[in-house]
Length: 176
Ligand code: IMP
Ligand code: MG
Image (cartoon, protein in one colour):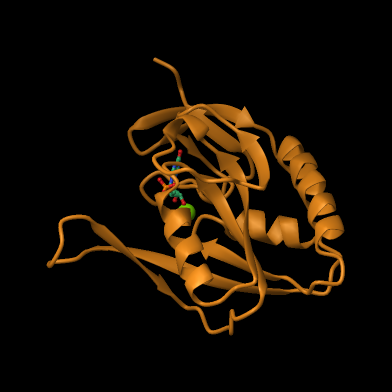
């Protein structure tokens, strides 16, 4: 299948995704009994995993959505990521961040710092995909769907230059 200029092949089937999400949901349902957790899905990439995961959560809980905007700070050299859209009071809440993928870990690390600074009682990560070999910072993905090698993937919320988010399965770049 072609997206923009690149050829992709099917990598993880929607049935397998669904099975893993069921296993993760079961763990969360047990771990967070009587704790009223606040799920925070990080847009855009996590919209599908958030929707499918939340249907399997049977706790009393809340869900909200944030975006992380990347921009270059004129004052500094590195990329600065800014959290937008957070309206909830985080103080003393049990927060579960929902991500599509943890790659270098920099985005989620920044988020962890922000939520801890806002006084969250606990912050854990639920991510469909994790590329441990790409890690630039040490991140524990407590609820992980699949650990994958450092290859580029699209589908199920993940995009390649804006396209592919609507695909129900996950595709990888076709090996040369
Ligand atoms: P990190 O800060 O390097 O962990 O980057 C995480 C973000 O990069 C994810 O939320 C995705 O939006 C994007 N990303 C990382 N790897 C891929 C990939 O293989 N396909 C599509 N997007 C990716
Ligand atoms: Mg993302």
